[in-house]
Structures are given as structure tokens and as C-alpha cells.
Amino acid sequence: MDLKDIQNLIKFVAKSGASEVKLEMEDIKITIRTGSEDGRGETTYIQQIPAMSQPQMQMQPQASGTQQQSAPSTETPAEAADSKLITIKSPIIGTFYRKSSPDKPVFVEVGDNINTGDVLCVIEAMKLFNEIESEVSGKIVKVLVDDSSPVEFDQPLFLVDPS
Figure 1 (cartoon, helix red, strand yellow):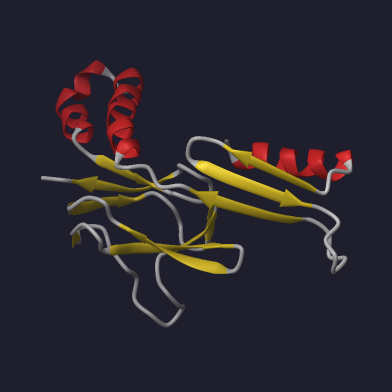
Figure 2 (cartoon, rainbow, N blue to C red; figure 1 turned 120 degrees about the vertical axis):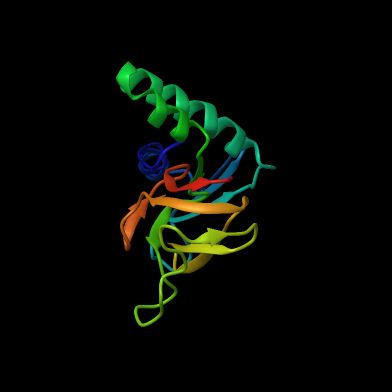
């Protein structure tokens, strides 16, 4: 479910007149309440349920398959090098920040070695700042998102070389 689907669901619930709708899928729970007692309108809660390393296993073949389709056959060494990279994706919808505050240094730079549990970035969602920790060890090859940019669920954030 992407951001547009969630926005359309919110609009649909608001128009339908329902006071509360709960939707639970494999990896996400959404609760939409409209017409709250304080008169401020609709409230949406989105909770992502972490999966046990399944996204990383699914991400690797997709990345190499995409590159095989788009890369010319003359770039076989580059293609082979990219196929071993792991993509770290956003677990939630929000705003991506590379550092904890404007006056602090970034969490990770290209070329940094990271370990499992290291904080890579912060994603702000509904006024909450969620530290995104690495589930793999390796070396940061590329940062795929600009600082202070909106990100969607499952959007690639970093490329990591696990070797």
C-alpha cells in the first residue's frame, strides 16, 4: 500500500460518514477516525509491523533483476558488482533526515562502515522522530534520498556492500 492509496482511503472514509475504520494487512495497521470529539477532524494512525529480515531477501533479487533488464550487456562487471549490494528501505512513511538536528553531523556518509544496530537516519512521522537502524553490516555505497525529503513505505534509502 503506497501513500496515494492511504490518502485515497482517508478521503473515502471521510466522505462515507464512518466514525472509525481499522485496516490490518501483512505488515501495516491503519486506523482512521473522523469527527473526533475535539472537532479537529480526522486522525490517522499508521503502524508498521516489522518483518523478520524478509524485505532484505526480497530486495536483492529485485535490484539485480531490474539492472539486468536496463543495463546493456557490455557492462557485465558493473552489473555483477551491483548485484551483491543490499538495499535498505524505509520501514515507514515520513520525512527523511540524515542527522538528528541541524547542528549535528550526519549519521552516516558514503564510504562509512556500519554494523547491525547502527543508526542510519531519522524519519519523522506524525511529529515522532524514528531512528532507523541498520539490519546489516557493511559499507555505505550510496545514499538514495536527499535530506529533508518525504519518503514512502518501502522506498530505497541506502545501498550497502555487505562484503
